[in-house]
Image (tube, rainbow, N blue to C red; front, side, top):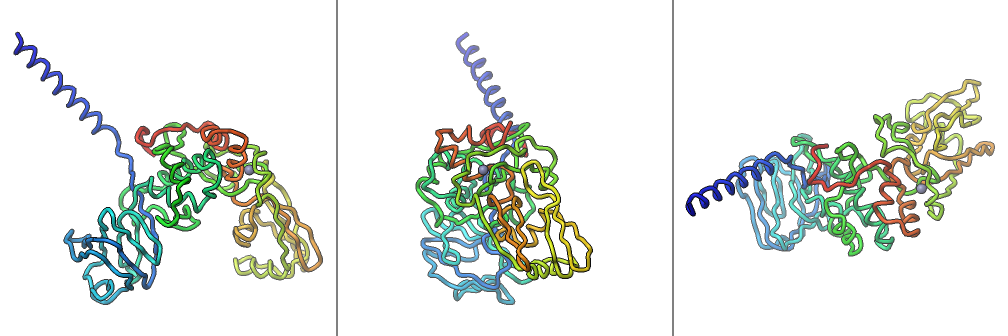
Length: 389
Ligand SMILES: [Zn+2]
């Protein structure tokens, strides 16, 4: 009898283990590593490794180099391989694997994780940092907001940055997921980590924003100027409730709340011409219509020959430069051969207003309240728990 019970118990345990195994197997694998392009199409770069390392040829899998320390050296392409210091390594794609305590430095910037050096078909060098998402976010946060901001604002930023990163991870096959410039999130590597921003990342570890069990593209920007923008207004994104505009009374104290720029009409004419818009001497610029967040939909530009040109507000901002016309919410004051553009806010306006998040944190809202305010109807989940993007 005792034996039967033992057998039964072990059968139940085995079934339990098998069932648990099945669950683990069935649970979709969520990528926790992200590939960041830290150097793109460069002729050469500087590399140093403070500690031991191995270099692996990714086509053969073989180790083709190793050492206990690498002094800062030039990396460039030769006909028959990649020159690292005095050594020529005959591979087109190689993985540099620093030991756990080693520090890898590229162009004087330290990075965590491993890096892949790639010879592109155009004979340039691209470097990809393969890094854990949590470490990546630590290298992003300080570049996005001040580490002195209240902790709840930093936590909200950590979740938004992590969610955007996870959203950006491509299925296998792509060379990299994100770049390290303003076109993705500004990533500064290990050199951009700070104690308080690291705490915000650790506190919210794994948390992402979802809608209908899918990770959403959590856009953010500096200052909305009073109302955030509908994503479908700006990018014709299919209707995602968390990316609908909301009023924002919280960014009034932002240094980017008000701005003013002055242009020569002749310079605007040249910029438009450069972008393929044929226009002669500009005599007047007027605003035709605005969307519900007050951002400009269309501008009318009058020229000396009497013909008016209509141009979309967002196209005009792109042509002038998004860091020149800081937002698409402004008034126009004509001044003879010149024009004053008097605007509000900085950024595209979709998603979280960073200075608004700061304002909310100062009014004692916590990070979950901040996120659900700027991403209405979104649900905070652990990224291990959602099914797919
Ligand atoms: Zn705002």
